[in-house]
Picture 1 (cartoon, one colour):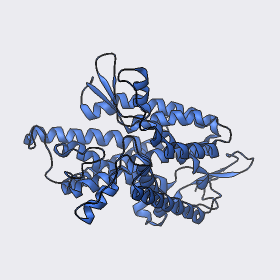
Picture 2 (cartoon, helix red, strand yellow):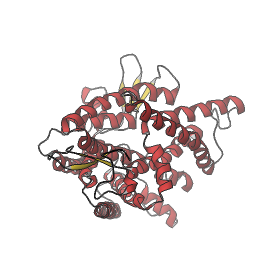
Picture 3 (cartoon, rainbow, N blue to C red):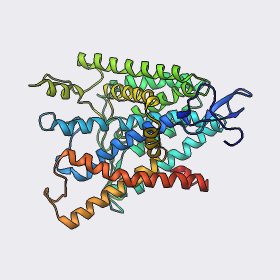
Picture 4 (cartoon, helix red, strand yellow):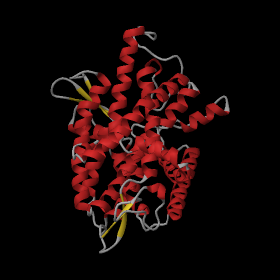
Length: 410
């Protein structure tokens, strides 16, 4: 083991951490730095769920789902496939906030962290408008630009870069994050006249809509920003739980308690059928249909109930990953350690495969080529995950070997 590296007190071997003296705010304090395997593994797990959902977008377009889904017309298999994918965005954004806190401990405080967040956020926004939109459309100048999760993460990072300058940023961000997550549904009734500056700003912040662009195209704000600022703030706020001096058992208990509390509050709010979700649930003809209605939540923008369910589930998964076999943890971490590389590659791979299948076999659902059933989607995603794993492993080794600052953005 290289000199000066090891596992700090309070950290498990699964965390894959190293320590450096004097890198925290107090002289001589030892803090955990480097990659934490459970964080990468959770990110990798939800990325695999995202792979299934995006396989649906390319290979099951004849059975598109609305938001929330139409319970009367959506088969249970398709509903639960979509429901599992709901974990992805909240976990991505919350872990971005957590990673920002860890970055600050490793790189010297909030000035370095704010600069990193600003540059990285601007890069992600540019990426969404170029390579990501091209991956979805294969058009150099598409008629509609979809502003999705990469856009939301990028703008959330830019917002967090500014919020880090609040006095006592960690507790302040927890308070602000809770206020946004719990309060943003109070703004659901606010609206502006279409075509006005207010409508454009509101489409970016809270109400999904279209924005006219000067060259005749339009932008679709699929991920309104405001709730995601709350999520990234809360992710940053739990950062101190991952400091090297925190006992891992204490950290797990905190995560379990947080996850269970969020799920309990979700159940209470959803049973009340009031504030927290714009679409009420109803009793169905069968218990399964009642459960589907109960779990049928709004994602665009994410309702309070949506965030309680998904972030609560994410906290439980992050705690539980401390208990999984090291080999499985390493497998998932390979995906999660190269998230942006995976994201770009999987979109191009899925779109390319669908284009090849359409050329070879012709359309089988109107003008589309689709797989015959939901189990086929899962099988397709499993098959595509194999080359993606090898590609991510190669990319991680390339980053370690070259230490290029450009590769660090992926």
